[in-house]
Image (cartoon, rainbow, N blue to C red; front, side, top):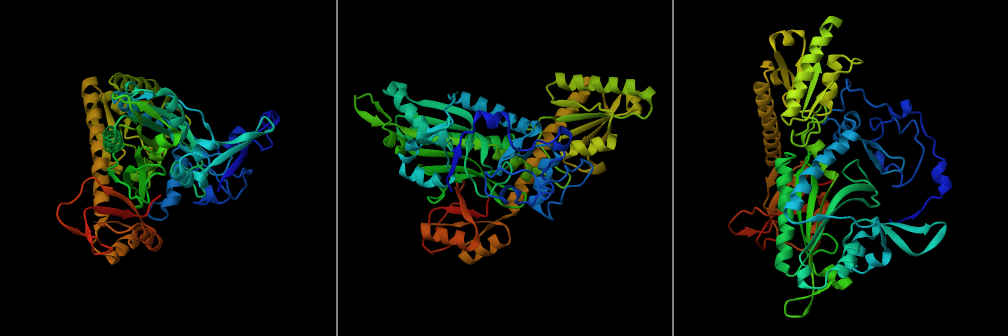
Length: 542
């Protein structure tokens, strides 16, 4: 559906009608006791005051979340609430990203910003409001996005001469500006990126995974030749793939989208597909070869070296805050969030323990020294010296937040100049090691080694889970059996778009991608029996 937005008056901004709760009460509003589909229990975008049926108390960190095996969706919402990653916004389908959740997004930004700049891209920013006529210029683009558009029709109390689209993506406005900046082959390639918010009027929403508004980066490039554009599109999906494996420990499968799943307005879409803990697929990032579709629609041309006018060849590519949801659903367990060290805002938490006031000073002094040693060595470390909670409460709280390593320091540890180290990825006593020396070089080396081990262990575990849940199939019946058992199906495919649509209607699964890594040898299409050059991966998805 298309939503029409009216800009609020100054009076409504200064004196909002919606009831504001006292700060103490607002802190109790949470996701836990809302229905799993709470983001979609009313039409998206409907502003409504909170009611008892929609609001529960934030689960205390000493309360267990819903087991993953019992209700994966409820578990996911419990973790988001209890780990303090996000909360619901006042408009249905929106979310407020809390500091800890935003810190994970910042870690994603930090890595990708470096990679974008290393490959010649510059950051800039485009307006959020786009003339509706821009969207209409590229036929397949407007057809693909029209159901998700939010429109502004009134501004300053007056009807606008032309309705404005609240940015769903920026290919149209980028081309409008590229047309003004590109004149000669000397102006190419033009390669930019922006970090921005996007609005898409989704009917069924889920925090981080699908919301009315989300954060992302979107890259846009223009080139003189189709070969350069194709190289760029593949280079960016490779950057996303490395990021997923190396930083988030998510073993994505990179490949090409089918024609039906290709981005509206693109010639080719490349994707990275991740298997979540419930075995659904998550499209974690995309890179599009746009060909000349937008440059022809907008007249984005350049004069080549022979003096001839040519349309540019373009790409666009993006990842979003959806990646945060992917991290939660890939690595989390019944205890809560589990963060790969490279992406964790806090890599080590130090919990000092004392019973008598006489022990407090020396324990806190030792804990502070350990913090300083690790911080100096480049470890992201937090010292929890609060006195309002017990040590056991703190253990549960930081485990819920997924901190990779916990260091415990008590009076006996101070006397022996040692600490206790616990790993988040190995529960209980098996993950706890006593007697690690506080001597700086020894402690730093040990902690860094364990952080590397945790990073590798999470990736290996995720790879094992992924591979054990992909079934190779050679017939449609085998495909249906694999999907009905909750797994991914991988098999030869050369059938028609209508056959692909049939699979979707009958199984709920779609072609996630044609993987870049293909098996050798002759193949027979699982649907038609005709020769097939590639295998495709089918799965249900978010």
